[in-house]
Length: 137
Image 1 (cartoon, helix red, strand yellow):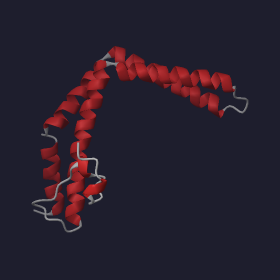
Image 2: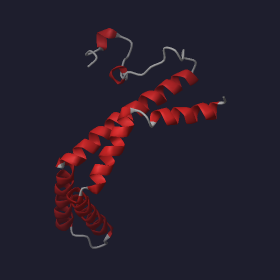
Image 3: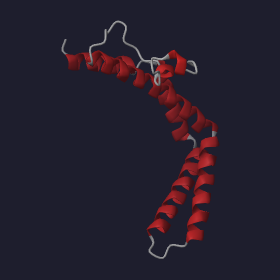
Image 4: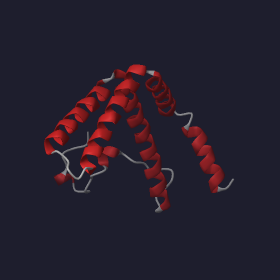
């Protein structure tokens, strides 16, 4: 089996991972929630209004300030939605898995032992000097 075939097998395994399945479910639930989609639409309209005002030669700083405030408020509404929170959590969990896989592959490509290569995000900023460490979380 060549490296590309192995990569495809890895892709299949990735799609069987619990975090991948959870992300797919959370995505579908969020996509089907009309209230959430309305909030996202409202946010997008505010973002467009901010962009349009920013591009105007005779832009009004007060109007721009007001539009930015409205856009931030719309963003908060989106992010407070329970289905969006579930989607964000699922996305973060899956991204952590992808990061781990990628870092292991990179480590192996740099000569690390494939049997022991791993990635711990808590150790990402490790200097190797325990005297400078606040401890791993």
